Image (tube, rainbow, N blue to C red):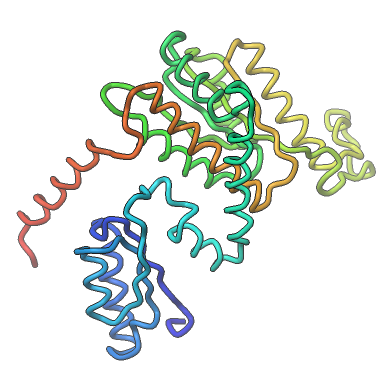
Amino acid sequence: EAERTGFLVISKSGSTAETMAQFIYCMDVFRKHLGQDKFANHFTSITEPGHRPLREMSETHGITVIDHHPAIGGRYSALSATGMLPAMIAGLDGEALRSGAASLVDSITNSGSARDVAPAVGAVLAVGLAQYNGITASVLMPYLDRLEIFGKWYRQLWAESLGKDGKGTTPIDALGTVDQHSQLQLYLDGPKDKFFTLIISEMIQKGGLLPKDLINLPELAYLAGRSVGDLMAAEQQATIETLVAHNCPTRVLEIRHLDEYTLGALMMHFMLETIIAADLMDVNPFNQPAVEEGKVLVRKMMNERNVT
């Protein structure tokens, strides 16, 4: 349904190869389907001001362009237009997201001691464990399905901000309870080189009940009359206790309710934690010089290939 389809094209630099390739391809498809005079209404671009291929191509075809602030790096831009516009299109409360993030900053400015600043404590833990205890990986494991993509965002944030000059720890995104059945064996019985962060919430008596009359096997008696939330609560607590029992450094972040406000606070927490960790490690959290080498090679290889 091309008439009901729109594209939001986002590239801070305005030259990201994968983004531009998809943009050009989709423009061509919609131009052929809707006509030269109509297809531009189905596209909106977000990029930095100035000489940017995305901006210039968009303006050439009459596509609306929204400015991205040059001082905000891509992985730190979730609370700017690049993140807020998609969130609001998806029906989320953008104001609540930003309010949650602001509340985290306010709590820090009003704290009386660095010990009360959760992002600072987390950064000190992560860096200290890496420097003095041989920790080489940071595992983020939420027990909420809706935070699965959050884990992938954290993975980029931590890796791209800190992996410089031979420093940094490898971020791993896991999901409870799914990855209890794929990664937990390694975590418990493999090398003790990981720092664990579990995000949990109160789940007791939540979700559907498991009726007793359907459970007539003694092996399943522990489920009778319980809710799915009861099982999830037991699973997350069991994982915490098992990790601790196996001498795995573990911290737990407990949230009461996952909504836009809480998500904004969580995102700000991890952004600040990453920036503070970078300061402790003496690296720049806002660049990615090694990645740029690959981008240059991609363009070189593409230019050397014959066009069919």
